[in-house]
View: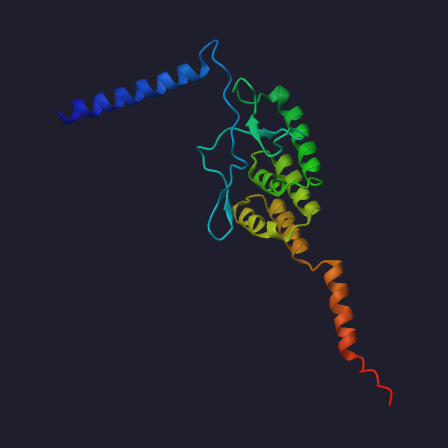
Length: 194
């Protein structure tokens, strides 16, 4: 009896999955709606992010210059995976988009850049790291530290650590202000006229 219940449940689950796949890819069905997520990166309460899970959506592209700049779309409008023939074009396009995001005034731009630190393609991860440094926002350090913990390539770990060190440096303005404050503290007070 128990085996029949398990078998029935498994068959029902398989039928539901098959129906979902059929209706998603049925001929004549409208293309899937764009995803509304800005990032496939999970963020914990302490601000650190983790790489996307294995069940995360396939590679996505950001439409730079679109009215909703941080909106991410499927890799292919038909929902198909990227092929080797268009992968190089995708990488070049994505790298250009990351460079464009460095000059954006949109606060979601940094989140989009940081989400690409988890991309499967090493070229895109490297471009995202360069874009993060270019933005120069120290708020990116927790995400970089998280990525440092997950990186497997030793050279990539060195580059991430260099970016963390760079973003941790004080800005030129703050160094100048500190120097002026120290100089003012060391000067004797001006003598008041009698």
